[in-house]
Length: 174
Image: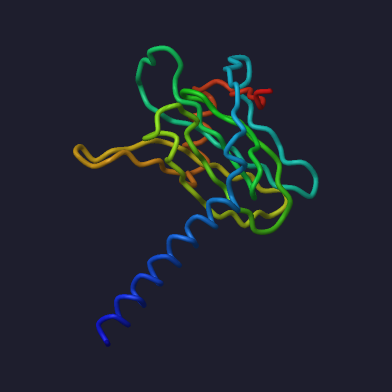
């Protein structure tokens, strides 16, 4: 009887952990059916200043040196349950946020299940007048599966990426 109770307790804990992970992703990402068209704007390379009373967030997609056959993977960026834009190939974009705690999400927009199921999350406590930089990249450890990372990065490294990469201009598909 104790064994059955222990198994039920373990299963309940695992289910609760799975549910909390799903809830975290849902609260940070946006609706599954929203997809973006994104393109590069090579004319933009300046660091903007935050709006008065707000913070500015840059999200940089860094896939390294690679040639894409057809279209490169588009990565959607969500904030507090709403998609705010997307990057394609090596690119960046920025958006304003109010002060306080926010939840960021990135997700590959792909027809391939292995990519479309990849999600990375980060928490941001924004302060007015500050600029925050995040980098997305897909990594693998050889035989290990692919992972999507979303990491805060050093402002100097971010400025180098922004000077080197084009701005991503995106809009939701209709």
